[in-house]
Amino acid sequence: MGAKRILVVEDNKFVGNLLRNKLQKARYSVVWAQDLAQALQLLESGGDDFFAAILDYALPDAPDGEVIDHVVRRNIPSVVFTGLLSDEVRSTVWIKNVVDYVLKDNFSSPDYLVATIQRLERNLVTKVLVVDDSSFFRQVIVDLLKVHRFQILTAADGIEALKVVTEHPDIKLVITDFSMPEMDGFKLTQRLRAKYAKEDMAIIGISAKGENLLAARFIKYGANDFIIKQSFLTEEFYSRVNQCLDGLENVRIIREAAIKDYLTGLYNRRYFFDVGHKLFASAARKSITLSCAMIDIDHFKKVNDTYGHDVGDQALQHIAAILLKRMRATDIVARVGGEEFCVLAVNVEDGNIQGLFEELRQQVAAAPLTISDGRELNLAVSIGVAANNSGYSLEEMVKVADEQMYVAKRSGRNRVVVGGDGVSGDEAGVDTR
Image (cartoon, rainbow, N blue to C red; front, side, top):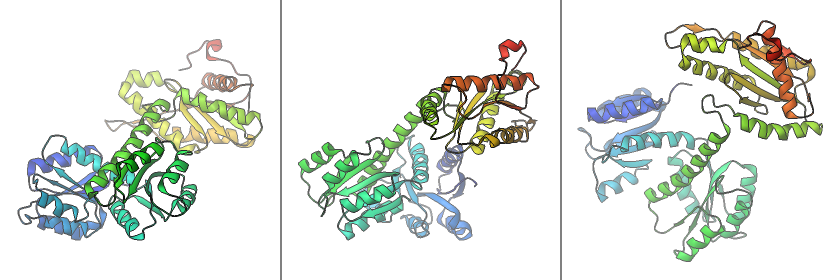
C-alpha cells in the first residue's frame, strides 16, 4: 500500500511549501492546490483517493471558507488552517463538520497539523464505545466521532455496554452517560475499572446534570474526564477525547520502549527471558511444546568494516523484518545481542523444525539488502536450534541453541543445525563471526 494522499489547499507559497515538506517527511504523499479552482479540479480527478485535507479558510477565489464545503461533502476529513481569529469564523468552521481548526499563529502549528493527520490514521483502528439511553444524544456523539474516523460501538445502558466490551476487549475509549436504567455510569465505570486500568482504557463520563460533585464522583470511580451535555463545545469534546487517547498512546510508547529493541523493533533480551520463562513453564507442564533458535548474521563485522555502521544497522533491520514476516504471532522473536537474534517457536512438530528454519535461512539468502548507492548486499545467517523442550531450564535451552549455532558457523556458515551436543565457538578455536 502506498503513502496516504493529503490534499493541501493554500495560496501562500511559503506556507504551502512548509506544509508539503513536513507532511512528506512524515511519509505522506502531498497534492497542493493554491486556490479553489485548482482544488476542485483535483477533487474531480481523484477526490476519492485523499485520506485527509488541510484547507486555508480564505482563498483568492473563495474568501469565506467555501472550499470547506466542497471537500467535506466528499467525506474527506478536513483540518482548517488559517490566520483568521474571530468567534464568527470559528463558529462557521465548526458547523461544517471539520476535524480541527488550527491558527497560523506560531511555529509549532505545522507540527500540530501533522500530528493531527497521524492521529486520524490511528483512529481508523481505535474502537470507541458510546453508552447512553438517549438515542438522540447517542447519535450526536456518534456523528462527532465519525468525523475523526473512529470505529464506533454503541450501547443503551451499562449492562449492554459490558456485553459489548466482552465482545470487543480492545475498546480504547468509553464515553458513558450517568443516568441510565439497569446500570448507571458510576457502576459501569467501577465494573470497567475492575478489569481495565486507566493505562489500557480511557473513560469519559457525561451527564445532563452540571453538578461539580457529579464530575468529582465520576473521576473518583475511575473516569479519566467528565463533560456536561448541555454546555460542551465541539472543540472541547474533541480536545478531551484526543487528550485521553494521547495519554493511552504515550503509555504504549513507554511500555514498548521498555520491552523492544530501539533499532529493529523486535523484543529485547529482557522481555525475551521474562516471557520465555512463562512459556517454558507451560512447556514443562506439557501444555505446549517449545523450540529455541539462535540466529547470527554471518560475517557481520566485515559488513560494518566495509560499508560502515549505518549499513550494518540497515542489515539488522533487514533481517529483523524477514524474521517478523516468517515467524508466527505466537512465537517470541528478539534481538539478544549485537547481530544475534533468538526465537522461541511454539508448538512446532519435531518433523517440521528443520524445515521451518531452513526456509528462514533460504529467505535471508534470497533477499539481498539494497544500500544507498544502489548496490545489493547479500546476507546470510547461521542458525542453531534446540528442539522441543530441550534442557531443564530456558537458559539451558538457549545454551543448546547457541552451541548448535556455533556448530553451523564451524561447518561453513549459512546453514541450520538442530540438536546434538555441539561445540562452542571458544572450544573450536576459530573465527565464528
